[in-house]
Image (cartoon, rainbow, N blue to C red):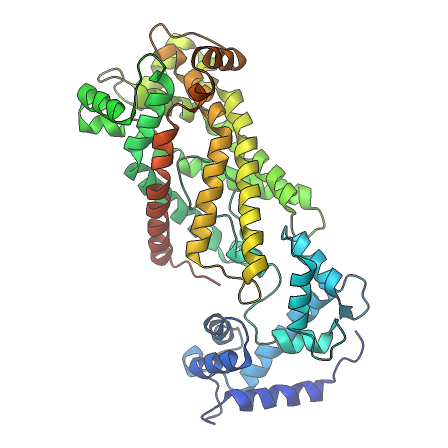
Length: 468
């Protein structure tokens, strides 16, 4: 790197910055002074930046702020990280970052920004009008900025599995290396599992109604939402609305754990020496991880469908249901509907990820010059819209899967293959027949997302999960 300042010059510059931040001249920079200084300097999120500075390893007395030595140690560590980041973005190693290198860096993270947007980012750091950023401009811009690196943009935009709408076909959650090393990843998984359990329990009547309509609704019986609810209550009382919920909750933990571990291994194999995965690579890794998890826990899916559709007194419980299926239909029955289920992962994950990335890019192009953090309302809206679009795309396969799982339990039901069942539905009911039960499925999205988010945030707080 050309023109690197000497150690004496660096320390002199840090000392001047310390004096500027130390407003009350007590020889320490406390969190309030640091927050005010960051706000004055326009260094991103002042609260987050101040929290980072006060929590750095060099601060031996967090409540008392940073003295000059601790502040110097913190800035020295910052500069080392920033220098590594600068070199990784300076792809041609000429000592400058230009517009094309900014675009390439964002593209590597799966974020498409226009030439105009890249120029706007460059202008915010370019002080000498050369339309490039040298090391000193980069360092001075980011030294006290809360953005650790370009990948921080992804931190805010993780397509979180906390949005539990009863379908576990989404791309698994992304965790940073810091979260993995600190153990925060498993706490987030636990919080997500608890949130999913509460959310599914809260929306179980709508989920059972969806399965009921998928299997029993047809042109002839005109089964609708109110009719389905009345029928279920008449047959087994209000408690009947929660049939199948126990195993639906039980399968969250093993599925999430298997999917997470498979995703990490597949991602590592695909990534190689790359620092991050492109969107297409994340889609492949997520789909394969989802298929792996579904393959292992699929018997639980079959049991969930059978228990959801059971009549009063038909089974004594989960183990009785499993035993009867094994005795009467054989082991293969536990994988009925497996093919449409796995095939459904591709349109679900593909559409879900594509819509989410499109909405993310649109927001970033319009707002990223102010902040990389979109806020929870934007994230929930993007996640809900993308998941709903994914459901619409994969719903016909989900319906065929459910009917195949239930075939042997429905009296007089046809024992058809996936293609045979698709042809039968289309010939008897038309395209609308492939979307039976989608109305209650849509009805549960908003309450499911709301419940899971509120519970997730409270669980994170209870488990001591800290945000960066």
